[in-house]
Image (cartoon, rainbow, N blue to C red; front, side, top):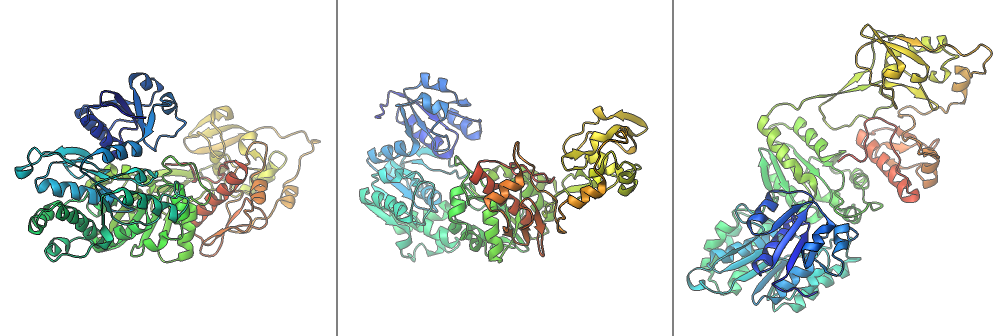
Length: 635
């Protein structure tokens, strides 16, 4: 689909860094540019200042107002708005490659790591040396936005601008680039969601090399004594990035002395989220590949006088699965790693690509303490609550972990303990408690109606024999609506006396292992016993046929799905014998997790996630936990 400068183009997902940069390039080339995104942001407001019309929300009606569209990979191909542009839509990578290839002077920076930094420093360096520069880069640096234009000065005034872009290989469109100068930072296998093998990944770079008029291989560059004083203060990976930017300038016939003088100011600032300090003792970094993580962790280790705690959100299930065994070693130097749920981007779940799979590899490696969080926010609460003077917290990942930054700044600025939450529990037998340092107080549901459980079972044996063996008190039972064998205590309650007032059972808000009772339970009025000649099983017979669980369990871990049994599905999927750390699935029942020697709460959570994944990928059923405190779908 050819584009004419007089036509109108709509960008679906325009708020992302890559799409925003492309929007500005297209606008500068005379196109009427509009865009939309699921939410507005500082970047979309900036785009409007650049002449790009931005709408909040995706809508197929946008297709009527534009000649063609460009879509980001983050928007699925079957999205209604994408479908509305059928035959008139292209990918971001294709369009950017076309712009670069048609430019008379272009520099494309590619590579597995460091391309944002290298592209930024290259553009800023050439501009500092007086060249007219146009750029489109997937990152921002202070007042240097994702795209823009810097006019030439001195001998370069009035000259045609050189176009500097960050060339992304993730979707294979790097192979379409025909740049005047191609800068290659490094080639570590990545993006397994697109490339079936390392060979296919490298072939994409080779295609771009063959099409370029000249190639700068960052890793092959030798040191230059004139640049050494500038480079010495940088981390090793950034020395290579700066050396590549300098090499581009030198090949464009700028003097070594001029390059060295300008480079010092250029490299003083990294793009956002490239080891960026966000608050005292807290840094964030975009790293999500093992090689990038190792660099970021080393920098954080150097900054820490105390403990180094890393909160890591893996990016995409496919990458998590492929690099699961490589990730643990990348965190050498950290005292503790807290894993947050995978940021899926546009990927569906992939078997073997859950944080539980990654956690298991950390436990097997045994080199770094690893904990499991149910959300990024929970991980930060732990880090903030357990930090000591001199400690460093590093937020790692390319997903929505970046959304923590504003909260981090607020919490650190406030400098006070987080407000504590109260969770009402029964006897704790059916409640999972995280091993993170969280501001949670567990309050037992007990009160004056707290006669020993044996009394009520003996007195009401013909009414609720299935309560035999359940620990707790009457107040706790009622408050938490305890039960067993498909029954619950609410079935036999007529009314509850709370703070001097009798409340009918129908108004108690009884639900699964919960109630809406607010206050102290003082007394309970029970329903009438069944007739004396009714066939009612005794507590003894219930206990005689009940499976005796081993010590250290939560009872049945998952609820039975409609029309089936969780235990049957788990056994059929092969869950028996599964183990993570000290937690394992009991061989007597596939729906029972046993806390064995050395088991941690994170072990239990990881094992539960793996069991759930096993059933999901075998039978398409998403099991819900019966144990309180676990929410698999929390973000």
